[in-house]
Image (tube, rainbow, N blue to C red):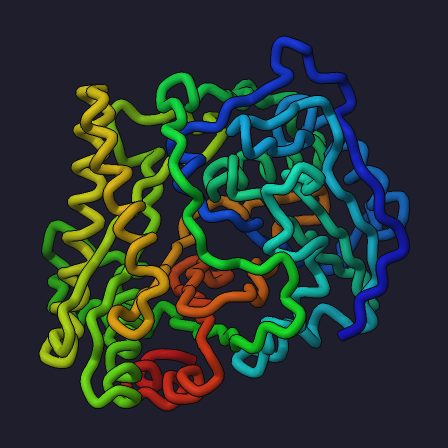
Length: 439
């Protein structure tokens, strides 16, 4: 696939940001976010009726983007690292128009043969181009396909955006584009730093290079459909009459983690200590709940640990229970922090963060894995006037030992985007546990 850019510009808010809001302070939870852009691509088929996908439609998207930025003004600013603040002086977001020399069906038809690296051309910038004074907080590329379909590729700076905040913005932008924004009353709120001021923490270094050129890691999408999820639920002993259905995300994490341990054992004769971290969205879990219109990062880190050789003795159900209990503990600890509001309680958020930094680059002693779930978010609802997306994806990130999980188009399955080195990826593709469930 060849993608050709035909324009690139900075889009500024339609109304200037007030001088009162010139500097937006990041919060404690923003400090915990990795230094990277969050890459999300939405795919749309050619509309059967106007508006047709042409330069006029791309201009309409630009106009509604500008109006939406007036509400989400920090996204048009620039991050000032030494101040832990966003300079909200309306520098603008990067907006790119491009054309691809393929039909959308050619991408959708690849299924398991899809090379995630091919999708990087649909992104407006590199995932690692972030946190410098010249880097936009948001970059967008609208790509039209030969069939009339199109893709909207977005890179949001993780410094002030988690998936909840990202979807809040996308849905507001879509509502302006399809004319439904007049019925909306919830306006974005930027006050997390008031509730949770920054602590001057060092950045969580995931070693995301600014350029992916020369990075030799592999990425592969493993699809677990609704039938596979149901089979996994039975494997962990789920009773349909029981009180709680196992999370599809935790089932997939357990399956992959167990496979990773087997790969580790194959290469080293015995599996090393294993440390797995999962960001856990807290917006709908802690009490009192955060308003849905609240922007910024709001997540805890759920760590799970295995001693050397321990994973070889554990069943799939054991892996699932370890992960489930870790997430439950993180949510419980963060709920206590929210309800008590005591300074010392911040440790329940900060300690897993420091533990992650300690374990991230001890490859000879500890195998470190970072899993993040983008499931159950509303990006599949984003209708810009041409219907909802037929697919949503990420792309290849210049890192390894990372797994991004997304809903499949039906909403019942999981697409796991795994980043590994080439040798371990080949071993993972042949793993009996993975082959039993993945399409």
